[in-house]
Image 1 (cartoon, rainbow, N blue to C red):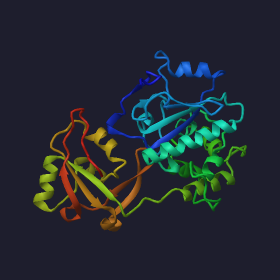
Image 2: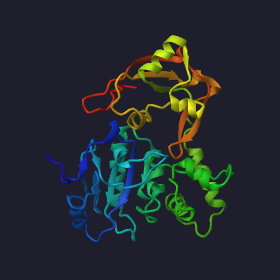
Image 3: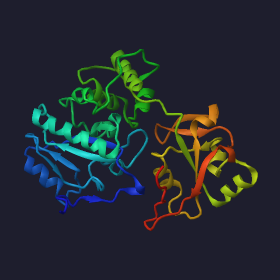
Image 4: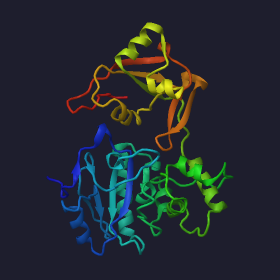
Length: 330
């Protein structure tokens, strides 16, 4: 059965959903909202539309890239449309979300999170990823209700803040923008009752959000992509300082499995003769540091040469017919 909305495309760079973005329609009638989401001239869509009575309609298959997020980023990663499922709740933004609608959302979220292995921290607001443009789903949306069911992130208490608010918002995932605008977006999500200038409650709430986020897992495989000449050097010499960008930065750039598709699309698109290397992060010891990159996302950086002995395995990384490299199961 064809999707009701023609406004979709293929997900880019082999990406699959890792986020769920919640919106409100902001329109007077449900029929008007649905018509816009299905209008080719509007060039907007979402995967799901939920009516106030709890009726949920699939507008775009989840495997495809719906056009719901627009410009923005989260945890330093762009092209949110390729990384996410978009859910539109019909609401003008000036009223509570009805019980049947919230119940339908909860059921839908549970299914999507299970299908795509998306954790609670991957459920975000449109205003989180685009704070300079958007305010939905707004102050009337009950994030606490979702969090109590494990369907969204909640602060782990109100601990003493480790420092100023701005770096904490960077680490949580908020993109750079005017400080007051970013504060407003953070409050919409985590403390909509707070008012006035930045205060201690904001900082304690942000510290609680950080405490609820998992620390980078040191016991996981991480990956390095080498070109043919770089791979030959590693084989001949037993170690390598990496590619020219690694030499310039003073460390070897590595990626997690989730980060690898964007690394390939950004730096190696269409290249032949690549070799994918896998290492055990824990075995790399203190020379491996998790540091912000790509606007705040934590990436593994190795502050010593990468050694042949570090590798768990390696294999060729050919591009597929669509030009995307075939990483296989990682």
